Length: 424
Image (cartoon, rainbow, N blue to C red; front, side):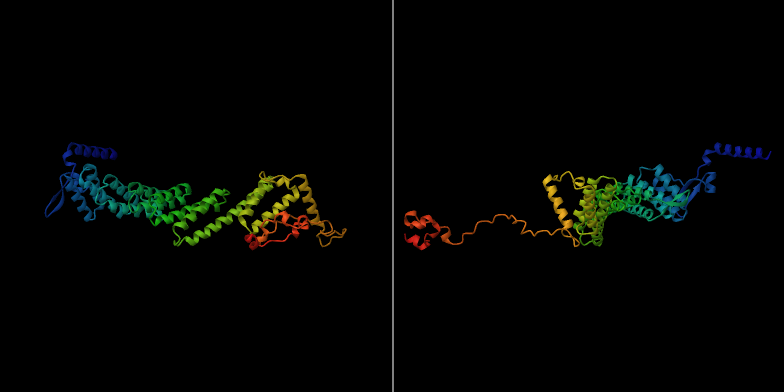
């Protein structure tokens, strides 16, 4: 009975409202001395209606007046109505910017960012373009620093992806603005946090291409090397990764030798080299355990070339010698090495046997003859004696002028001085 009475009352109220549509709207009218007032409408008397004026100027004035009075909810409604109703007017640009400012002030950062973005998109020549872009950058930086996103009005979780999207939007809206370079840099940092290393490197490289003289370009070059170095640290055995990381830090040192990070860059290069040597040694040991002796030898020799006189190089040489001793020289010979002929192999075996027996301190076999008694050592022929005097290069006198014994023995012929030759 009671429910039927309530439903009948509600139906009667709806019928009355529908029958008097002229009373359902409340207009706001501005009069000097009294300000804005509601006129007409049943809902207007209770303050339920939207703040609406008849022109764009009046609507903007109404919204600003509500904002000054602290009625932010109705001010937002007034700005939105202006944008929706008078979207092509000059007042719409101001309304969009003011609406974004209200949302920013209330802490609704994502909605404020979207409103600033709408202003920049719709009014790229607006007077508030720089201020809107700065506000967008500030909001994106807050999300980068850990600002939490709202869910049903409640702050729930932070999001690096959302911050990355914001910086990407800033760069696309104003690719040549002062903050565009910084937006690209922060976007790269956020990509690194999400494990998007390849995309982060592309973002840093875009800075080097478009803003090479900007100081942030130095930081971008360092980050490229850092991202590539991280792949080496995480166990990458690809030599190309090490080379690219090392070259990136070398480019950084060449472009910014006085940068505070230059010392760290040099230490990173040394760390990359050490890690690569360990990686080569690990790969060689893996191939050795797998029975692929030639591949193991190749990597051991890479360690010898790159490690110098380090403990890793000594271990690599020890393992190469052990493989040759156990499996023979032919088993570890690489494809680019010439094979041994029987004679050289036999000579090497004899030499190795002599080294292993004759030179031992506990050798008790027959005495070995010294090298001089075993035969003279064959030596290469010496070169001809140098000619140092004119007599060594002057021609001999004619045979008729020589004594008979001089003809038979040319060395006994008298030598003529250069002066005598000239007198003749």
